[in-house]
Amino acid sequence: MPEASVIADEKTVNFGHRWWHRWFRTPGELHELGVVGINMRNARFLLPNNPRRLYELVDNKLRTKALAEEHGMNVAETYGVVRNPHDANRVEKFLGGNESFVIKPTRGSGGKGVLVIDGKNGANFVKPSGTELTPGDLRNHVTNILAGLFSLGGKRDYALIEYRVLPAALLTALSFQGAPDIRVVMLHGYPVMAMLRASTKESDGRSNLHQGAIGIGIDIATGVTVRAIHHGKPVTKHPDLGINLIGVQIPEWDTILRMSVTCQEMTGLGYLGVDIMIDETKGPLMIEVNARPGLAIQMANGIGLMKRLEPVVEEHRRHPTADLAAKIAFSKKHFRAKLPTA
Ligand SMILES: Nc1ncnc2c1ncn2[C@@H]1O[C@H](COP(=O)(O)OP(=O)(O)O)[C@@H](O)[C@H]1O
Ligand SMILES: [Mg+2]
Image (cartoon, rainbow, N blue to C red; front, top):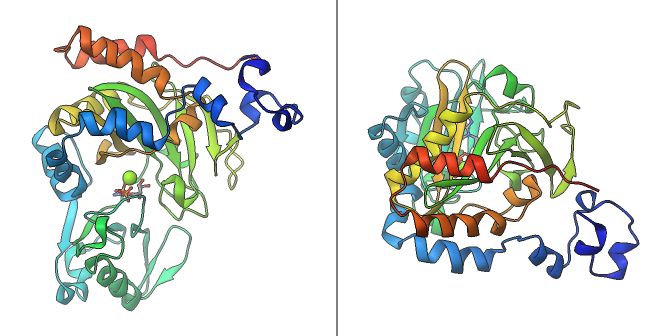
């Protein structure tokens, strides 16, 4: 993209970087790039397409998992659900001998309260960062989850204990001791943008960008990674591992696209984000569905969502009954990643 078309103010011109090296943008530039902000997301895409009553299906991870299984998708096996403080003392009872597991609030978001446990050291539980939790620490965490400390609206919650995904080897290489997950944003069942989120030392086994994870844009057409951001700034290598993040083929890409479209069909939500993880032996697993997916995916892909949402709105108007295969074919054809030109 020529500099002149994206640079509006004097200060940024003086930086002299090519546009994708400069992460700061003026509001005018953002508009030009088709970047969708939170108000526009809500007003134009969330409110008209996501009826309130459908939120309950995805704001509760237990319900989403049950729904996904009904639709033939694989999910991370649920080991147990802690529903009261009494059971908070007996987490191990639910584990059935499994030493690695994940505990999370059933109604959490943004990675808050998600605790990934890799294994045990004596009586202690070891996190991906190597930090150990005593059984007392674990109990406190569960108690906090039950009290609603991490949950939507701060209401009382349950703690979900589930299988800890063991990521495919290719993906572990990209992620600091955590399992990367794949986020696909969809409108009307059309995949519009995707990213791989890889954990860092800082994000402690979670791949939420707000926890310090890296967002890596994925080409919808091919499943190959195209660019990456960390704390909002472009990077090409993993900050802890030094490994190259670009040009990596995500395995089972077609399965992932099909699962994403199925998540739209099963929830009825018009605008959503689907989180999928790829397990070494179990393959792609549906982790959760978000009715208010974040907007950083645009930065990870270096393209504004508007450039993809508008063509989908138009296509959906023309073919309101398009099926899964037609939607995937449309997205692959029209949303092929373009490499930036200087
Ligand atoms: N079963 C799991 N195995 C391994 N990592 C997980 C698992 N569940 C969640 N995580 C990690 O924690 C992050 C947040 O979990 P998620 O279920 O998406 O909750 P939230 O709604 O808070 O984003 C995921 O992006 C993933 O990196
Ligand atoms: Mg998530």
